[in-house]
Image (cartoon, rainbow, N blue to C red; front, side, top):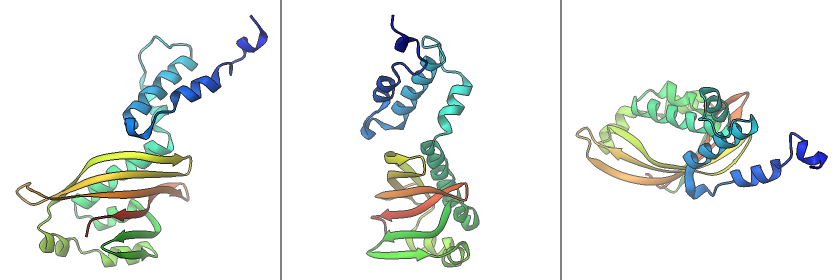
Length: 184
């Protein structure tokens, strides 16, 4: 046995390479692999993941971004424009309906949003994430491909749309920087 095999970092390159999962396999598969790697690193490869392993895994940029997405949809569905604005970072950009809209700050965004008019004009009552796939990420930015649906008050499907959300931290707080959507 050589001294390299006794090193705490021996085999790390192969472990990191093993953890890389194509985006098409999704976040759950990546988290499963991360948990297995964490278990192996602490010498318990055969043991089940603990709560602390899950907490450690959720501390990643991807977990932060997904938490922002959950808060975004909760605020949107609650027609809570103030809470919705809390999920964004400014300036915030929305590309949709053939236009580019830049909201310079929170005040501008809140003033421009009229959820009652949106609901009245579209028949909308709620939206849901149908699919979210992290397509690119780094410690300070995450790109998420999204498919979402809109529903009316009777929970009938109005439409489904594809989008791309860009999430990043500003002053230590993660938020949606930009959205590009095929929705009107």
